[in-house]
Image (cartoon, rainbow, N blue to C red; front, side):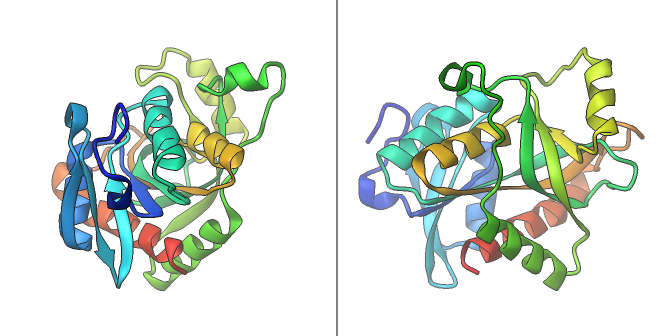
Length: 234
């Protein structure tokens, strides 16, 4: 038990999927895991552990933004022994050829700053995904005939961004999409020698203004969860 996670050490699996929304964690656990049990509800941040094809999996909310994710990932790694951590979430597309409902696999994650900036100081550390997870996710997406893009993303500090010039530079330099958590997840995984990946569903488009309708979200997000699970145990 930690300050933010009320689970016993044995309640958390070595493989953890991390949606930002705790209610999405509950939906994913009820949809994809057998014998799912709620193992945490401290501060409303729900976590569930069950099995997928005989493999133990925890699906735990991480909240919005890198500071929130950093709290949960630090505790999951240091106090619960998590070894594989996969973010499953939504993102905004930043390239014309990336469409709503497509899946982005974040090979790298650029950022203005992260909670780890105090450690790196003047160093511009380049956080990246675990290759074995990335390779497994690509194979899983292709097997499902899911449209998938692999490349760099941008982890933003803010949701209501007032830097259109920065977004233009991200697009110019080939960044596929924007979200708010992956860069710090990759930093922490590198620091502690863990595997990490971000599997992201495109829910809206910064260029076209298109957004995924609520009734279409469940199937699209379901593809993302299946890809993450296949990658974890490939």
